[in-house]
Image (cartoon, rainbow, N blue to C red; front, side):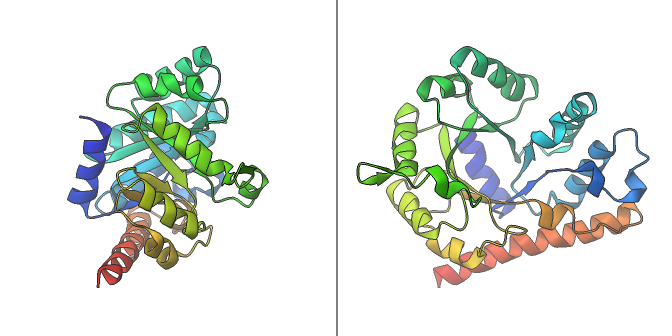
Length: 273
């Protein structure tokens, strides 16, 4: 199934625009899981079990798994196996290199692990993204305008009369408008309004809500289309740091995910009135 079809189907069937980020730091895993053979895998399994009815997908930040590659890569495989097939998966890898190197990244994340999609940084141009775009039924989330404070260092620099992030979007869409969406930070509401007006069929991955304190209401009100997902990580997966068993952990974590989904849907409903 083409990713765009799976993406729209997931949004519709789950009635959710929430993606849970599995940025799993082993030092923050509750004590009752620390004795597991692979604590990260065990933690992720519980998070998925607790949240899967409230989300349309999951995003794994690869940095949290590469620090201990043997156990980390095993945790990636275990986690992907636990995610229901109708939900989207995102490898938050932020890769981008010369084409023969990027080909290996594409094989690793899209072929071997089997993620549906991957985040890519565009600085090296079209050929650095080409191997990801060649994969059938896969998708690229191109970094356009990020939620960190350092975004101002480069992303708003003017190229002629346009900020660099706009040039990136225009170029990337020309590479393949059916296989590219964009990462746009939640705090950039003016820019979110523009991109969703200019590109009404282009999906967005929006970080910066939750622990990063972006305004969900302002973000939702800025959007001109519904092809978006909002990532929340720490505010959900670390909502039960003192849980003493699996059932307590799942109850608290599930409530956090349900609240996040309902808040998104609530603001969408208010916007329609």
